[in-house]
Every structure is written in structure tokens, then in C-alpha cells.
Image (cartoon, rainbow over all chains, first blue to last red; front, top):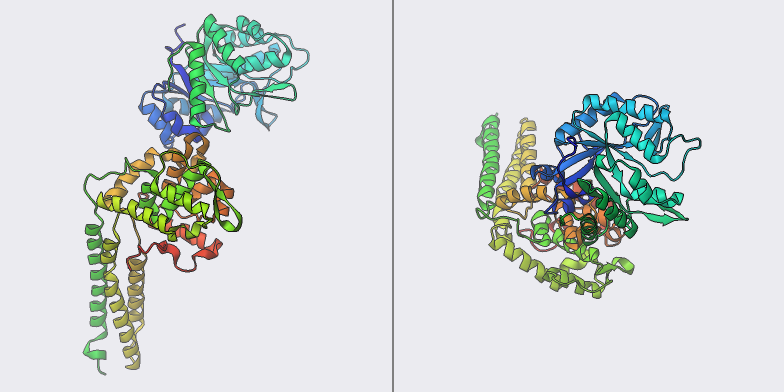
Length: 275
Length: 300
């Protein structure tokens, strides 16, 4: 695909708490930063600036646009998102297929959409609005859902496929979500993998999780479990994504443990180690 | 009407203010020369405790070591604010680490650490190396810089005498009172200013601090990720407050003060004042003029 950037290999989510660790990764070529945490016009955090100066690709990852909301995306948020993308000179941006507010009420976290044609229409309309202001491709990330809405018209793969086809967006695949959803629904993660348009994957999130009261939670604060790494291997065997990144959002372990996780992702995907 | 001491008020005031300005300028020039440091010296290869010494003297060096030892799980706090050993001494530690670790075995309190002979000797070793490299200001240089305090004191004495004599002579003395207050402020400034790093070290520290910005408390750095050295360096660069970010319970139990690390920061002295000011209001342990660190390094 003409839109797809050249392979970056293994990356990591840049967070201020581990900025020094990320900076110290000699082979790093790909990182992601939460778009809302970056000032569009002020000075960038030094750790992030160092990465840019080194030629590391840094992708802004939005979490507050609420693309799945019934109402149009907030133009101010889109403007900020666009400014951050330009500031980082990012070749692509990413957001979630989810909503974070409805009727003016902030949910505070990402909520799953009902898999209906109406929801597809809403997301597609919002992605078009975003693309009007952001010239680079956008990758959309389906989120982990601990529950399904009733009366759904589409399967997960159909839902994602339809949104991507109609909006022209790329896929940001969270492999830990694929695992979590399949496990919590009692389905086979490989089945979903085989139904997804893997040729449209811009990059992949690899995160850790933990089991709690019989449900697997995609916590981003635990180690990446072996089944998720196995799934990275399965995915890479089908169609290796241009980039896979470790997404850790808290309870950061010692540097050696992070290094081991990055190396495990590199081994599973067949990319060179960045550590 | 006779002029007091045979000199007219305006003339005396002019002489007095000129003398004050001269002392201020000469002291500043003298300091500039004294504190220059060795050209080309850099802090880039220093360990956390050395960086800490340059930023906050003996006390911050001790805090930096505490941060490292605590992050390594080697020390904790016991009853009565004392330090205790809580694990083995990690490999590759500095003499200061060992000295503090051994002091912890004897249940020494944090505030008494600098008085411990082994800790004091480790600090001396640390200081000597930095002074030899032209990075640290020596006690001798500090003493020399403070000689100008004598000039300031002389000015105060003359000013007070003139005010008294003038008042007895029924002359207006208001301007002279202000000028004397000025001399007092000048003297106090000369007395209070304490620094550890030379100008060369401070310049080099600015880049170093920028490079280690990820350890700034504003980033809520993950000390688990950065390890013992990162923890020690965080304290060295960002002061006692970093210890509170890292391990609030330990820092409070050990009565660590939130002294700021001054070196390299623009307007560093005001930051240092603010830091020690706030620590004094919350702790009774600094009534005895402990801003000198008790290490005998105050230039007499």
C-alpha cells in the first residue's frame, strides 16, 4: 500500500516516567506519544525532542477525540491534534474506535461502540472531519471490550473492516485486545486475526494485562503474557506489521524487565532487537 | 552649626555609598576570579554523589547516597528516626555509600550522619577530588571570598556611629539610616552566599541537568526503572524533594529536608533559599544554623 510507511520494527510508547529508558534504547526507530500530553506550540519535553533529533518516528496517539461519539468531533481538539502531528513531523496519527463523552458528559475512559451501521456512519463521518485537517494517514484502534452491546448487526471484523473501507483509515491493531476480547468471549483469537484486513495494519500495540475474577483485563500495567507474545508470532507469520510497540502505562518495572519485553516482542515478530 | 565630624552630610553620604558600592563590586570581581574553576572541566563523568555535592554540598551528597541505598533496598528506617540496614550492600558502591551503610548498622540518625567520622572522611575524599578538578569551590576560597564581610561590617559600624553622632548633633539622619541598612543587607548577602560549584561546573551542570531532565520530579520518574543510580542522580540534581517523590515514607521517617539543588539552575540562590526556608518551618532540627551543613565548610 502506498500509504504504509517503511517498516520501523519494535517501538515503545513514550511516557515521561520512563523517558530516560526510552532515550537509552540504541536501536529505537518508532515511538508513540499520547497526543493530549503534548503542547502543540510550546517546548517539547526534552526526552521527546532527543528522539526526534535522532530521527526516531514519533506518532501522536489521541485518546480524547471521541471519534465514536454521535456528535461531531470537537474542532478545537482536532486542531490541537493536527498541530501536534505537525510539531512531531509524524507520518501518521492514531485514535480509537470508541467514545469518551456523550451529551456533554465525560466518561473519563474509552467506551466501546455498539457494532451497528449507525455507529459505523458516526465514526466514518468523524474520521472524515479529522482527515480534513490532518494531511497524514490516520490509524484507528479498536478497543478492548469487557461486554457486548445487545442487538449488534455486525461482527467485530465486519465492523472494523467497514469503518476502515469507508473512511480510508489504517488499522492500529492492539494484539492484547484481540487476546482479551477472544478470551473473555470464549472465542478463538486467531479466527478474528484471520478476518481482519492485516494489510491495512499501520502498527501494533503490545500490552500486558492480568486476570481478575475470571476476566482478562488489558491493564497496560502488567507484564505482557506469553499468549499475547504467541499471538504476535501468529500475526507476524500471516503479515508482519511495519511496527510493533510495547504499550506500558504505569507500574513501570526495572529497566531490565522492559528490555526483556522489548526483546521478546522482537523475537516473536522477527524484527531486530532495539535494546 | 558644625558639620558632624567636620564632614557635611551629603559629602559623607556620597563617600559612604561609594565605599559600599566599591565593596560590592570588588567582592563580586574577586568572587568571579575565585570561583572560576578550571577551564574545560566537566561534570559529565561524575557520579551522583559528586553531582549532589556540587549542587548542595555535604548534605545533598548524603541524601543522594541515601536515595541510592534506599532504591537498592539496602537501608530503611527504624525506631526514633534512625537508619537501619534492610538488605545487603549492593556491589560497586562508593566509599560514602559504605560509610552510610555502616552507620545505619549502628542506628545513626540521618541528621547526625555528617558527624559520623567515616561519613565525614568519605565526604572529605569526595570534596578533595572535585576541588582538584576545579569543579568545587574549596573552603579556603570561600574564606577568602568572605573577607569582604569585614569591609561590610566596618561600613555598618561607621554608619551606626555616624547616625548616632548626627542625631546628637541635631542633624537629619534619615538618609544615613537607609544607607546603613543598605550596608547591612550587603554584608548579610556576602555572609549568606554559600556555593559549592565553580562557574565552570555550573555551566557544565546546565547541560547535564537538561540531559537528565527525565529524572525531574515533574516527570514523576519511575525509579524502579532507573534503578539505584537513577534514584541517586535524581536526588543529586533535583534535591531532597526527589527523595519524597521516590519514597515519601522513608524520606519523612529519615527527616530528609526538601533542600533544593541549586547549581546550574538560573536564579539558583533564590531557589535554595525557598527550599531551606520551607524545610525550617516544618522541622525543628535547623534552628542551629544548619544551613552550613555542620560540615565545618562554612569558611569559619
